[in-house]
Length: 221
Image (cartoon, rainbow, N blue to C red; front, side):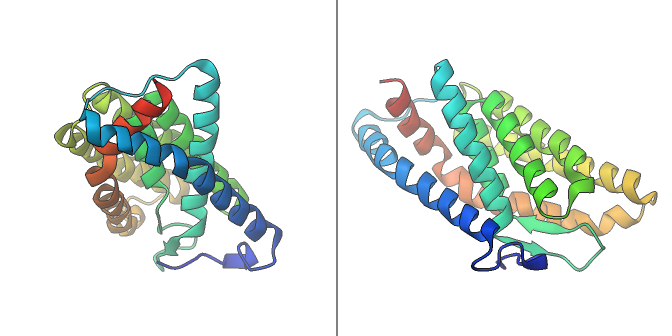
């Protein structure tokens, strides 16, 4: 993976670099203790397949954290494909999007995915893509969360990611068609969009059920 430093956005010493660094540090430190605690309970109590239930305050806090994680994972580690002037970006933002949808439900996943990725577009010179990203990523979070809702199994989660893949490929194809007025140009971005979801799936699927159970013990105890 390549860290995107286009236009000095994440250059060391730059304000954005400092903001990104502090967000990553805070989110990792603040969650590591709770995840350990929850995972420990999972090992002794076993697996359930329920989506985590959050109260109003928890929902706001978790949604904010997942927006930040989606933004950071999109901004920090990405590869820009040399296929067009403003398209073809491979990033890891789908990982927190899928985890948010599977663990905390469609509302958190939809907001985290749509807002987190659109925020990256707005702050990183991809502003023209922001409205499309808001819709496509938000829809991915919604569908993933709905499919896996209260039926959190590896097979169910895999089906959810397949639907998310279709939404991403079709959604961004239509977006590029609208932006460039050409039906052939968007085809070059399809492989990159597929790679994004495949990479996210390889990371998310093996841990999704365990993390969901761990989080359930943390928030619902």
